[in-house]
Length: 345
Image 1 (cartoon, rainbow, N blue to C red):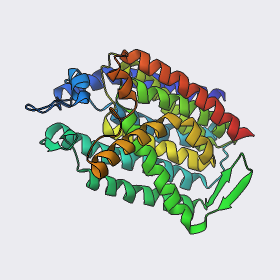
Image 2: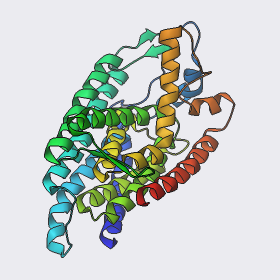
Image 3: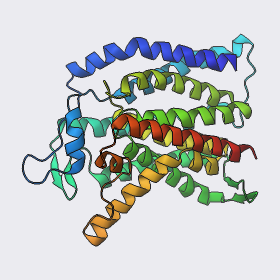
Image 4: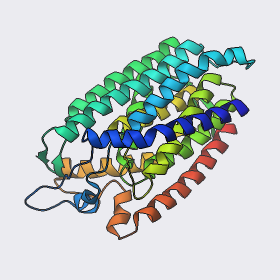
């Protein structure tokens, strides 16, 4: 465990050294949030509350992805020569491949979306102005990546079962594990993305989730996964220092899609998919609120909820942003504890 803690600290230090120059670079590249409100007509509530953040750099997720990936590539191979016993539930190379395929592929998709969103032309939509890749296009690409990762889990790692701890049942899904895993990955990628709307909200909740799965991975003696999560937490903690209110940098879709999808893969690798639904419960709840709202617009022609995703409801009620975030973190901690309890019973 001392090795993992050391890696976490080292990742935190490296990211802390790089993040201020990285923020300055984003300013020079004009990789900053722009105002999204329409110039004429009714201004959506979201734009009223959030266009004040225009001009803040976007791309913190890119830095975290690069730091974690490079540090893992540099540090993991020498670990075997440091007297550390390396163990894993699966073939180590195949496990590392599926983790970083998801991490990097979803990160690249998100980066393309960020570039189009920041430098492309906004279009009018039913729920306000829309910028970035078209929804159907981005959703289809997510499924392509997720199905590839799911196939790797099924074919390369031979994962095909789902364990339900409360009823103590194990279901062998066989080939149907691939669409199940892909659905889980796509769901969490989008759940994290819609949650990433307040300063520090999504990053803080993710850090809580990762601490829970770090304990699960360490308890199962999965060295590659434990090292990866340690590096991820360390880099994320440094990012979060600059992402809390008032944020000096945002994560962007590059980080949001990569982090949500990879969190799902972590849950699938540990075999704790049911615990994942609890530990990441706030992400799921936020996604459901957005789904309900989209359903209302497309099927009923009107919104069902006052606003979505759900965290914006509290802003609509004039709650201060840090108050919403801190209470969400507390709820996330309790869900993580409950999820850990389910994972060990």
